[in-house]
Length: 161
Length: 285
Image 1 (cartoon, rainbow over the protein chains, first blue to last red):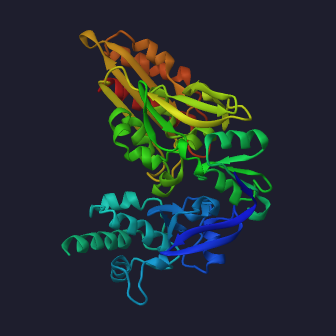
Image 2: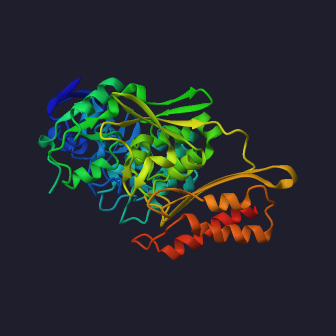
Image 3: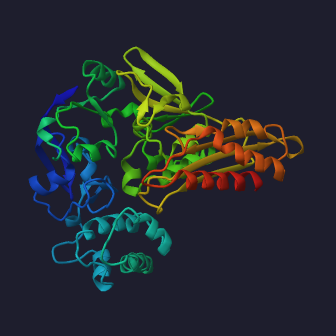
């Protein structure tokens, strides 16, 4: 059995194989920010309540402040940095800009990823269903309406395409 | 004070045998499955210097399987997997509904059924459903598996009867003898996501000859230190027709099996009144 305080932990981050060497119980959010320099992922509450630190783990939203990095060995992590291609924004990011769905920005990376998992999985354009899916992501600026509008718009555009 | 990663030794068993051996060798180790409860305390710096038994790689404890007379749910099965599983939705819909109400999608994707039980919160959202389905919990140690009726697992607030060397390996769900005529699941909280329940309820009702009650199972969470079946209510209505007088008496009986308290989330008075309303509308339907 593997038993050590630290060892090499390998996983795919935004499509690239990465290896982390350090304490195995370090939180995924801290490994992403401190060891890999991916500071797009923000910490909010540190208790899994606010959703700010959401990343996609094997394609599904997870609070990266509650994930010890030992548990991501061999898995796939996507952060907000995975969405745009250089200066070319992802369709969801474009809708967020158009609908003014971001204000202070702290919650935005987590909301983009939770919403992107919905769009990618073929989630519906029903605003109530979108609200339920996003209910674990708190925003204290926008009042949510513009965020829901942006997600609904992205789903509709994708269906029309 | 924050969690200090370097202070934690992580044990990462791959098999059930390795897991129970490691736990026997390191009885103070902190079992971690999805981490949705443990990591909150760890982030606050409350669990530093503990060895950690990371169970997430024990493949045999994942997923839902057919078992004689029911389903076997591996302890590491997530709430999201249970929420979406066709056989769970068909045969144990109240459990699927409860899993859809736990925390948020982020929590449902990570939190496990075994972890939820081991954490033994009085407000565990899956517990009333597991209580009315009369689930059994498999507690595994190096000496074998002990099968514990679900309600007997809890010893108090955040306390279970698990021995020092036991880990929850699975939850067994026996198929119901017949399809219930009525079912109910209700979570009452401040908002739909992330709220810890003020009240959580699950009920199954079978009617027999002449519409008399052949069996009622009704359970409440957040109403006592542990989840409770309303035994007095269940006995009161057994074999009888659900007329207005009987329903009124049964609703009064609800107080006999629960001990609601005032706390930061609600009051004893509110909890009892709302529980009675849920029970009344279920029996009257």
